[in-house]
Image 1 (cartoon, rainbow, N blue to C red):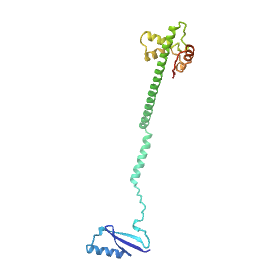
Image 2 (tube, rainbow, N blue to C red; image 1 turned 90 degrees about the vertical axis):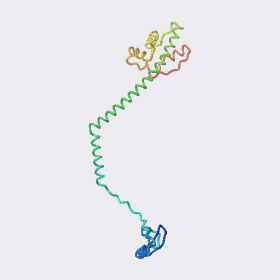
Image 3 (cartoon, helix red, strand yellow; image 1 turned 120 degrees about the horizontal axis):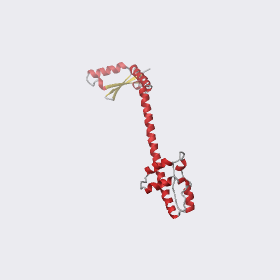
Image 4 (cartoon, one colour; image 1 turned 60 degrees about the vertical axis):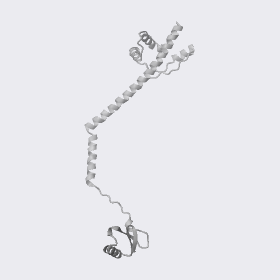
Length: 206
């Protein structure tokens, strides 16, 4: 397989040779006569009658395995697995679970309190509405589903201590054990609305 040796000086082509002895002799002569320094020269080797540059042949990267690094990584992985099984890690994990649970409970309690406050405001509107009806009509009867709440509102109003917290405290003393219906949309306000022809728009939620 014939080769062609291309000589560059400062990246400028200055000659093409058909064997390595000829090009080496040319370079040595140029250095000897101080025409140039060897550091400024470069040789590219081509396959004759082609454009294939042997010097630019792609070399496969050599993968060097660092055994010490590999052992350190394996040892580290082993220690991690042991740590994940340790009492210390399990305690930290459990503490994290407990903390998340507490945060969720706080969020739930906050949401529940907001809903109770909304319900209180709607109940307060009903109390004021029913009070006005009692004044206009002495025979007016408080709807059964509001019968427990009305006296509490009335008592706290007379004592000038009506507030959300005070109402909850008093209501807790008398509310039924299974009182889910006391915290859902009641039917009596719609019946009362149709009978008395006045507007009430509200929604009671748990």
